Image (cartoon, rainbow, N blue to C red; front, top):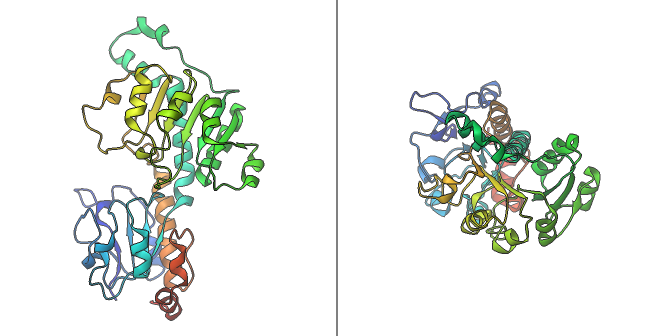
Length: 341
C-alpha cells in the first residue's frame, strides 16, 4: 500500500506548504504514512491515486479519467474546502471512492469573510482606499456609505456557513431572510430568519449575500430577472462560486444603476479577464477568490480532511461525505471492514 497522497498544489516554489499548518502532523501522530504527489496537476491522474488509501487535495479536479485502469482506488478523496463542482461524483461513486469536504473548517472563516465583504462594500472601502492613495480627499462626500443596522439581509443558500453568518449579523439587529429549498424550517426558526422564495428575497433585501453551492440548479440563479427586482440601493455579495451569478447581467445592472454596489470574491472566469468591466467600476469591491483564506481556515480545513481520512482507515464512515451512496457499496464497506491500515 502506497502512502496517503497530498496534492502538490499545496507547495510553493520554496517547497513549503503555502497554507502553512494544515494539520498533517495528525497523520504522523496516527502512524499513517503520507507524501506529496510528485507533480502539480490540474486533474488527478490514475498514477496519483492507484494503490493509495486516500488522497487529500485542493485545486485538482477529479473526473472519470482519474480512475482509468486503476486497480485499487482510494477509499477517500478528501477535498480541502467546501466546493466540489470540479469533482465528478458519479465517477467517484462508481469507482468506490468517498468524496469528503470540510464545511466545519471553512464555516467560520467564510462567514467572517462574507461579513467583511458586506461591510467593505457598504462603507465604500475600495474607492475610499483609492481616494486616499490618489490624494482625492475633496471627493469624500461623493462616496457616503450605508449602514447595516436594521436592514434586511437576504441569504441565497442557508447551509452551515450561511447560518453561522446569520449569527455574526445578530449585533446589527438586521432582518434575515433566506432562500434555500432544502433548508429545514426549524433551522430558520432557531435563528429568527424567514425562508422566502427567490423573487421575494430579491425585492425585499437591502443586501443579498450568495452562499450557495454551485450545482446545475444554482448556475446563473442570480440572473437578469433577479437583479432587476433588487432595490437600487441594494448590494450584492458573492463569496460562493462565480457562475451562480450571471456576470454579464450583473455588469449591466451595475452600469445602469439598478443596484448600488457589489462585492465579489469569485468570478465566472478565474483568473478574470483583464478587460472585465467589473475591474474598473468604483462601486465594486473585488478579491481574488481568497478573502476567506486565513490561518483559521488552513488548520480547520486541513484537520477536517485528515480526520475524514483517518476515520475511513479506522473503519468509520467519515463526516461530510457528499456522494453518500458510495458508503453502501460492497467495494467501500468491505474495504473499510478489513481496515486498510
